[in-house]
Length: 140
Image 1 (cartoon, rainbow, N blue to C red):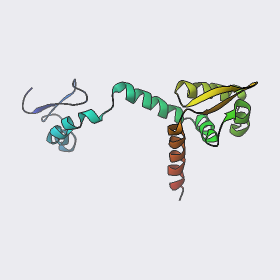
Image 2 (cartoon, rainbow, N blue to C red; image 1 turned 60 degrees about the vertical axis):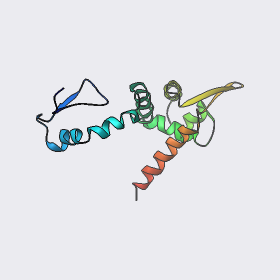
Image 3 (tube, one colour; image 1 turned 90 degrees about the vertical axis):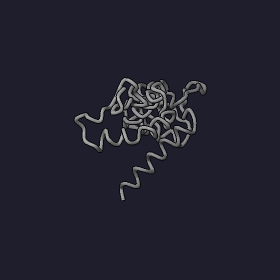
Image 4 (cartoon, rainbow, N blue to C red; image 1 turned 180 degrees about the vertical axis):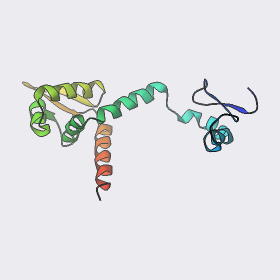
């Protein structure tokens, strides 16, 4: 490696040369701050963790799924209650709940004849409530 080349700390296959076609604000900042980047390399989560996290946020990006999750903030609900709240078909709610379960956002349990759903943990509740709070601030 020459003195004008920096290996990207998070993507070793990517090297950046001072002589590249990008402006100083792009690559120059990376080169000037390379020691800080190397020092903070441990702060970047693994690719697996980043993938799992983006899957969670992708699940939250659908309005029906978000409405289901916002409804569950009040407590456990069955599919029929979610159908009434979300105003979509039972098959649509069931499909969305299956995806939310696969992402680890909701759990289900049998209560006699019906299956009730709830958040998998308080982190999910926090994500929903923080998102709603942030969106309501933008309405003002």
